[in-house]
Image 1: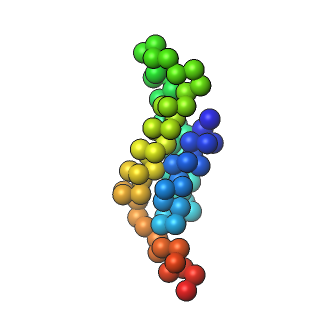
Image 2 (image 1 turned 90 degrees about the vertical axis):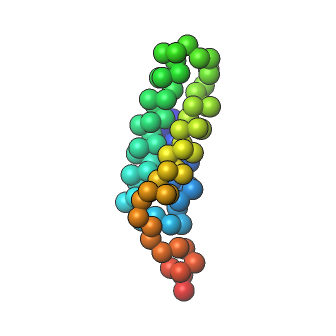
Length: 80
């Protein structure tokens, strides 16, 4: 569950952030994703596989990270 959270969250910014930032994005998304599923379970909101909460958390972390972490050069600039 946390691995998929890290992969999805870092996909939004993969061409623009450094590798250490992608790792940080994935780690934060994994932790928040697991926390989000537990949060819904404590509130007795029915999500049998936790898909909605994981998806929302991953996307939110990915978008916020893209806006807040320092950007590297774009992929196009690196290949030239």
